Amino acid sequence: MHKSIKDMASLYLVAAMVLFLFNLPSAQAKQRYVRTLEKYTIPDVTLINQDGKTIALKQYLDDTDKNVVLEFIFATCTTICPILSIGLTNLQKKLGDEVDGAQLVSISIDPEHDTPRVMKEYLKRYNAGPGWDFLTGSLEDINRTMRAFDAYVSDKMGHRPLVFLHAPKAETWVRIDGLLSGRELKKEYLLLEKNKAPVK
Image (cartoon, rainbow, N blue to C red):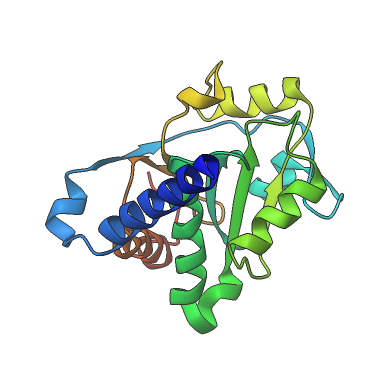
């Protein structure tokens, strides 16, 4: 009984945080995250998606003709991961007919737990549409990937809210450090559309 009440309280807390974040005025949202342009070298690792398909990460991210929106999460997270993933859910909805031009990528930082079955259930929970992959792999390859994006954490509970955006063939990635509203995420995405040429 107590556990059920505690679980419900946690759900209400997450829901309240989500409502707060997605209804913030633009000026307030800007104060809560830092946007930078970064150059990253994608590691030559092979990961696995929610369908058990092997993904050569470097080719998958470098050779795509779609805009990439990438996050580092884990399926059992009850703090920032749900907020990040709801952001991707809302982005898919808000893009409408343009959603085919987006590739959403979630990379697990808990590969020992996040199997393809777990990841598939996670994506279903967040109503993920086509074009959203959840990737896992060996601990070594996951750590290499996190380090490549300057997102490494030794303890999954200490991970930061990060979102990375990349236009096809662009030299730089947009790095968002902090929680941003759904309005701001769409704005950042549309900036990629507006500036398809590589950023110098």
